[in-house]
Length: 254
Ligand code: FES
Image (cartoon, rainbow, N blue to C red; front, top):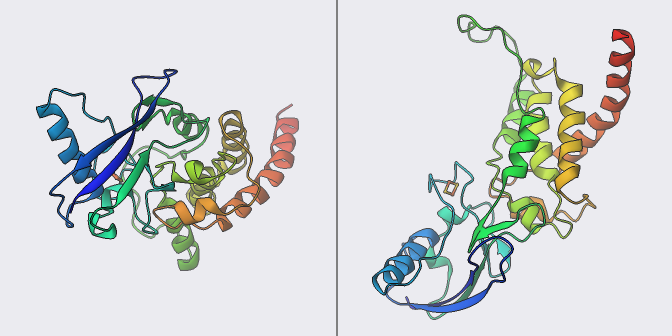
């Protein structure tokens, strides 16, 4: 396959960037999208040019490190698929493909296709954990969890934190990411101790960095793990309760 790539090149944060056109020849349809970028970079390096910076790690749809806008779609044209698992056979021979970094105020561009997603880390630090007693591992099945609850919690826990939801949202909102992280802990017995503080803190840190959700639903479509926007409704319900319960807790502590 021969592909024309229009790639966003930007030397650093706050520097004006622009699209640059590259012809990539002899692309195998079996290559992943990232392998095609590797091929481009190998050729650029051989020509003494600066390779295109892009994030990647596992290349198995697990780590959430990869992610670019491909022809205006977060992670490209295949639903429920991270960029690293998208294959070139999804494109026509001779196609022109536009590749951009995530576009969101909460994710400033660091270089080329790499953005700073540390705002997600701030949200996780605010409550994406549970308190556990240290000591030996508890027996399996010591805490019974009904199967539907475990399944729903697992659906939320499938979030890989790639940021496609933010990039796809016209408001640059991170509600799907935050809802997935809040819900997978709030649903389980182990997550109850911090349920209300977690919800309030994570939502409020999220609001510092990202826009507001107005129910466009683009996030659900862009999510490589097809996480449902139902989790946003669950988080919103818990947030309303948390505002009351945390005030009561504070009052009880004097
Ligand atoms: S590189 Fe890990 S999810 Fe794509």
